[in-house]
Length: 275
Image (cartoon, rainbow, N blue to C red; front, side, top):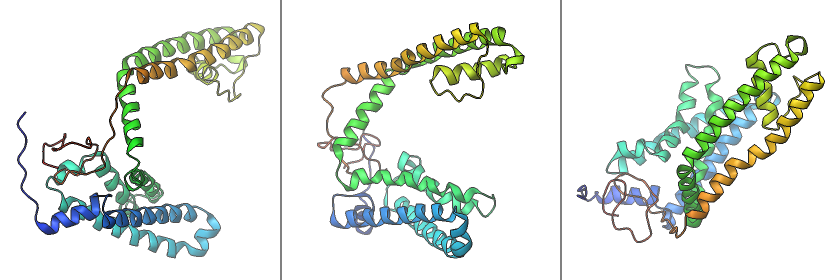
């Protein structure tokens, strides 16, 4: 396969990339640790502002702190785009989208009321702790889990289709048995009851009153325990089939900024650039 040619980045861009993207260097680790501290501070500020007494006493200070953090994150996001050879590729990656959504809520709050509370999305950026603490084996295990979920998606879809058919039948039967006088005012309402009962949630807002209805409800409850185990078994079997998973490196590509390469990889498996 022909690899994409990539220009050697300028020294200052290479140094900037090392600090922002690489957690293996002292400067990169210090940067990421500082970043995680600011993220935790930002999330804590949003949580505290939701408390009425704290908001009334320190509302302006908390809002000012949030804007300072948002500006810092905006600068950091711009620097990330500057120091990679393919900024659009990074911007559309998982971490790139997370970085973008970390700064958007504060700006949206200028136009949409209540959007400020979405700042808690920044907690997703704490996923970078896996890179900082060199927990590469966790990344490998997460990759294995993702492979197992993808491999079992057809089976799970068939299972979900079967469950959907089952709750439709159960809901229709319960509507016929109990009727509107016992709270089952429609088939959709009865289907809602069937879902709540089958999943063993049991809100109790609707309950059968007749003997036949209670008998059907008991059968649905027992069936629910068996059904819950099915998707777990499907994924477990697929996990058992996946073996020989290799440790994943935390090294980021200088061109697209993406990670997840094998430790001995020479080129990026996403864009083909030399690592």
